[in-house]
Image (cartoon, rainbow, N blue to C red):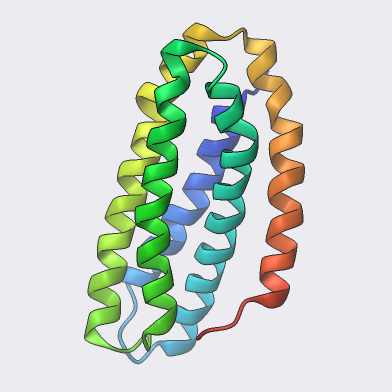
Length: 156
């Protein structure tokens, strides 16, 4: 039976692949960078909100996992700051790719935390069926937000 962290891991892999694709581009590949960044931005933003609204309240239920909700929120704050700056910069500027690399490193650290100690300790603290039951709520929350973001996203 799949649990919420396995679902989150799948989402992370998609974002990691898109980040790698951006890092392989040249400054002249403006359309490619913009396309991948839009995918990353909309998927991450929807994913983040689903974590904050579905996973974090769940983590707060137990003392041994409640600090993870705070860690997740703080990671999101740092990544959000960098994402918004990236939306404001031209994708062909030197600053953009450097800032993107920093944002990608922050994302990777966040992903490693979620799939490492957070997942491990949550699996110990909660029954598997509770972790599995979160998937449907997480997916519904994320998919609704992602559709809206894709329809309203604009490069600033």
